[in-house]
Image 1 (cartoon, helix red, strand yellow):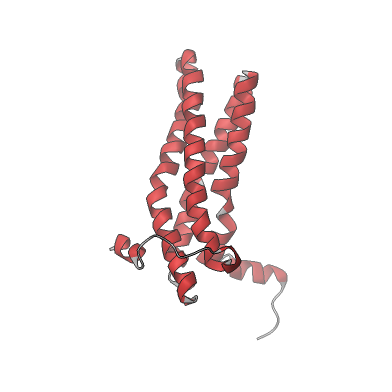
Image 2: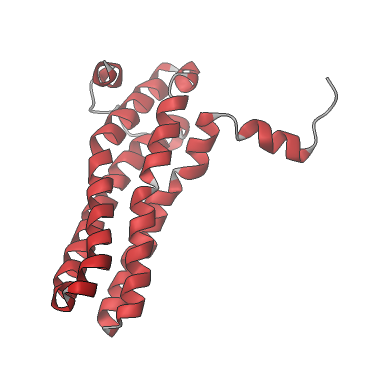
Length: 175
C-alpha cells in the first residue's frame, strides 16, 4: 500500500465516527461558554443586536450536541477496545450523554424563542434572555459533568476513583 497524502489521511479519519466525536465534542461546552459570556455582555449593554448574536451562539452550541452525541454513539463500540477502567469511564460518559441530551435541545428551543418571540412581543426580551442565560449556565454545568467522564476515558492522570454509574448501564439504556 503506497503512503497516503495528508489529505487522504484526513479523509480517512473523517469516515470514523469516534474521530468525528473527538473533533466535535468541545463545541457544546466551549460554544456555550462563549455564548454565556456574550449574553452577559450583551445584556449588560442592553444591546439587542449583541443579544441576538449571543443567542445565536447559544442556539448553535446547544444544537451541536446532536452531531456530537450521534458520532459518540456510532463510535461507542469501536472505543470498547480500551482497558477495563477506561471502558467503565466510557460507559459512564455515554450514560451521562444520553441523560443530558434533552437539556441541550430544550436550551436550543429556549434560545430560539428568545430570538423570535421579542420580534412580535418586544417586552418579553429581558425575561427570555434571562431564562436563556440561566438555562445556559445549567446546561453548561450538565455538559461539564458529561465531559468530565469523557476526559477520564483517555486521561488516566486525571482519574480519582471509579465512575458512580453502573457498569454496563449504557448498554441497558440502549435496549
